[in-house]
Image (tube, rainbow, N blue to C red):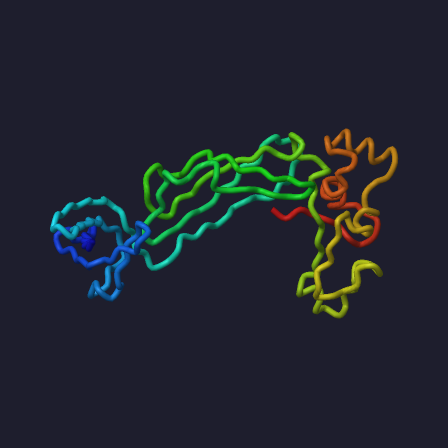
Amino acid sequence: MASYLWFEGEENPNSGRGARAEEGGNGTWSFNGSAINPPLGIGTYDVTVTATDLAGNTASDPGNNALTIQADVPTASLNAPNVTTDGASTYTFTVTYQSSVGIDITGLDNQDIRVTGPNGFDQAAQFISVNTPSNGSPRIATYRINTPGGAWDVADNGSYTFTYDSGYYNDNLKPGISLTMPKTQLTYTSEHLFPYFYNMISEGTNRVVQSKQLRIDEKDYFGLLLATAQYDTIGAITVKQID
């Protein structure tokens, strides 16, 4: 049996091109790509398959929008803001999808994104919405997950990093902030708040009082540091949040 494939593009549907295909013996058909000359350009094509058996009987089967040719692959860019306050039971983020031939929004669903993390956290993100309810590019999809343990808290804190600003590092008159963190161009990393900064926050009863007044968990050391170390501190270092 022989088969003939006819391609009609969306930009000029009346100037289609065809090629003869050969049956592969397992229900699939193939043809030499060079058989279509010039090659098909970027776009979406209707494909009509016409088959002829040994007796000369012919049948055709059209397929609308059956073939899409694009010069690039779709891209996805994540926008996941940092969590800076505790208590929320869900976390929402967005993904921007782009493609030269457009994004098919009917393919956006709860199977798109899987979020993994510490302590075995593994959850499929729930698809919430897309900014424009039609196919095209770019498209910004919004997703949501339930937070670990039901709410963000101190146990969900990530690691800490510290890097000297290049201007500070290159100024020979400015010393390292402590003996445990001498000046370097490398980045310090710790699973816990660095001892130098931990020692800047209050202790004992003072910490308990501050926690209640500021409504910050007593064990949220970094939160307490940001709230209390902006002005009057022990030593020459202050800590201020940069928005």
